[in-house]
Length: 568
Ligand code: WTA
Image (tube, rainbow, N blue to C red):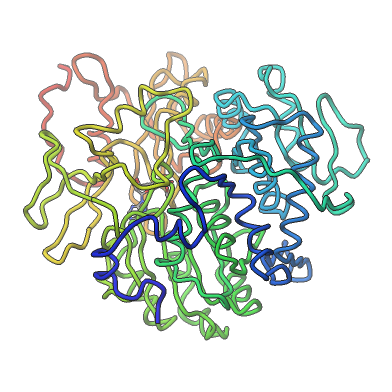
């Protein structure tokens, strides 16, 4: 029997207070995610249960942590941060590979009431800078291999007081503001005063890219636990004996909401693999740890498909019980392939950094329609709105904007220092997701596309504006426009169009130079696959570059209305 039982029954009788009761939380109580994910699980008698199975680059590099270890080690990190002058509300960035300190550190930060700001360790110094500056980050926890990037931008970050290095080996002297912290070598802190955070206390700050402007810091609060707990239980269907693997990095919201908070608040054993992607390495990892529940993303699934069915057959994956996916459109072929090779489909889930928790999902008891995102989570009011009137569309299979009534616990509370953009996400009482979909006669949602120019490459949102700005900083580039181009595995990849300043010669050599120049500024995920030279870029009469035309050209689509295109 699945946790959700009958989807239709749950819809009829739904109240968020169901989750509140299970978590023994009442309105006005203290609610601290760090405590819920460790101390409370110990109090429930699961102190000696394995919470984290961590593997580094090789299987021999294995560490296991019980829920009591989570409790003690997050206490130790929390106490260390407090000693360093970090207090409630301060932003603390986690800038690490998927090492244990990242997971334990997140709980430690939350326990002292500070705000966790996880960022991908692959970010270059420029990407790191804009996010630390925007957040006014006070401390950053990092590894020595990434500390150089912080040093480079330190002069421009007056609020950054501490650079905490978790793997300092004494070989080189510590630099300005650096301080070493050795979690394994520290005396465990048995008792830590958990900061009495309330429902609306700030918990996490996740950065996400929009079409224009700098990345936006999405503010989440401790009450988001209510949504994350229940969606994990009902959609991922985690059961006490499960071995769960969420492949996402906590630099991305999936890696925190469902890589940390969801499973641990339920007392579930979770695995982490801190190495790059390879189909056989992934299968071997799941075989070794007898993974039962696997939450991944379409690009990874398509890469596994590409590696072939023979790869799957080399491994015993009979432990797998349930599979789910998030982040980009999950094509029907991938679902059908999964049924063929794993004997079960991937259950698609749709949500966003801003929503904090799953919104439209496929549930264990419900028929999967390959290619569909499923139905709205119980309790949510979801609709497809006409893009002009913002009135709900009742007709089946007609595309419109995906919108929700903003009354679920994990909804973002604002964009950090950007109330204006936040307010634009709401209209006529709806939260506007910025995505388009249809609904079929059975109430299933079918993703159509984004309603903006943001590129979703392999599940990572890339702002064309950020890439265009980086290109413009190169002396050869006069103008730039960045759009998505189709790709078999990543669905979309980044493509740049540029015009050159006088005196520069278009060619492969210059392309390489420009690529090397922007590589230092952007994350590898945002790097264009190709730069195309143009004599001029299509523009509106008011001088705005029309990405839409370049996009249509790449996708072989009809160009549509060009009445605003400038004259020759
Ligand atoms: C896209 C991810 C199609 C969508 C947790 C959304 C999806 C954006 C799906 C959010 C899905 C996410 N099918 N598209 N199942 N899930 N998306 O903020 O465009 O990184 O708005 O959060 O990814 O991406 P974000």
